[in-house]
Image (cartoon, rainbow, N blue to C red; front, side, top):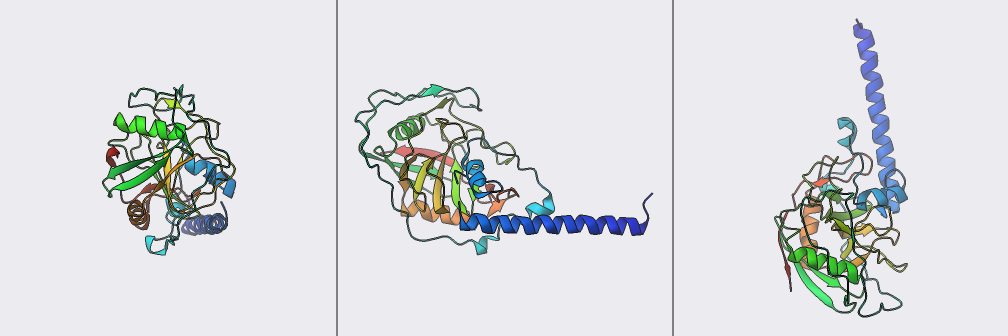
Length: 290
């Protein structure tokens, strides 16, 4: 049986380990804030892949460590200037063809038809409004940037795929974005981020892409051509490598909604990168396509 002295020494060592973990997390957040998504875990390049990946990482953590993984909402700094929309140096053929492929590797709780991949227009814009429990988020989809992503998003919206789905991952430091589109998301960070529509689409990213406030982009795994239904809305900073297809922009009205969600904070943040389910739930009640 341990003596009181032994118990005190054990408690002291445990506290020292917790403090060391907290200091290391703070150092990582400062490094991430100065740099990068493709989305990161311990180094900036790694955090990028983990966050915007359609496959979530292990978020199991020491409660004492996770309590310091994200700053209080009052400390979140959100830039007010919009990022410039990227432009292709060479226009895509119009119409174009999209190679949508059946995928059985993820969770597909909702049955949908594959989008029509023939004669897909690569010019023009489409106005869409995401109706959510946190407020309406109007979007402008741009076919010239990512015609296959736009075609898929519209197809899913018209099939009511996004109805009653929740946004499962919020980032408030380094990568300031809200990720949505997982039909199986429940708010459990250890399981969310793995669901999709049952098909994948081709990558449509190009080197000139930069991410920032107002950008709408597709999420994917580290594998090429692995995008599906998940997407992320950038409301602040996001210095990512140009690997994620940008397919539209977020209106000022929508950014106000995202700002409010961000300032409400993160519930049970993952200690590896500080992301997690938003405290203020964002659940889609419908999507209108104009």
